Image (cartoon, rainbow, N blue to C red; front, side):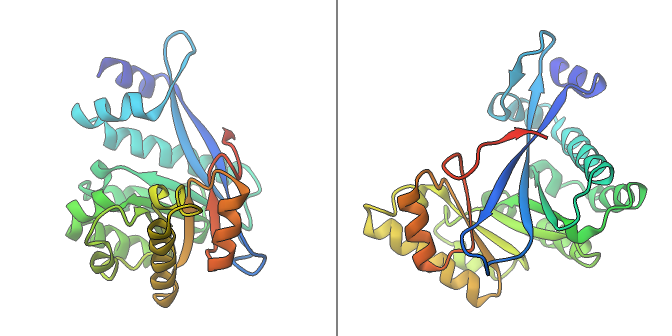
Amino acid sequence: ASLISQALEQDRFRLYAQTICALAPTADNTAHIEILVRMEDENGQLIPPSAFIPAAERYELMAAVDRHIVRESFRFISENDCEGICVSINLSSSALNDDKLSGFIKRCARKYKIRPNLVCFEINEAAAIASLANTRRLIDALKADGFRFALDDFGSKLSSFNYLKNFPVDYVKIDGSFVRGMVDNRIDHGMVAAINQIGHIMEMKTIAEFVENEQIAVKLRDLGVDFAQCYGVSRHAPL
């Protein structure tokens, strides 16, 4: 807990970006990047999210980390030419229970003169379902200003399609466990096809995670999936 608190105080969180690539020219004329975060220890070594986020959640520090990432991402957008780029920022499960977060985000947007439609907040499906009412309240509050939303890791829960009706998001990110195996596994292929079709019926754009090679990308294009994201498409780089 003290290491995370010190990292916040000493500004030792490092932002990275990974491109989300359009699979077809007509999918969207907006470029997309997802903000990823690493924590730097006292020796300058980078610590991945899987190593510090569980501790931050446990010691109730994740809300402060979320706000730091939002603030620094907005600062980056304000200081660089991000016109025509949609910047995705992940929100943790703690953020969904922070009833003051939407106000904080709106104040940051005014401070840094951010146009809300340049920002997309990503929420993990499991976290959204666990905090259904809070998630809907946060989405409604921020979408009213023009912010976008994506439901991350979609399809990992058996009840996914039922819950999708409750979240007026702009993007659905198809869970990578289906995408990774869709070339050789008919069931995985069928799940990706079903999620893509339902997403499009609900007028949402679809993003496939874990697109690790061109064979997967070809299958996704055949299905009409809008975007792809993974090391096989674009590696992350420092922001």
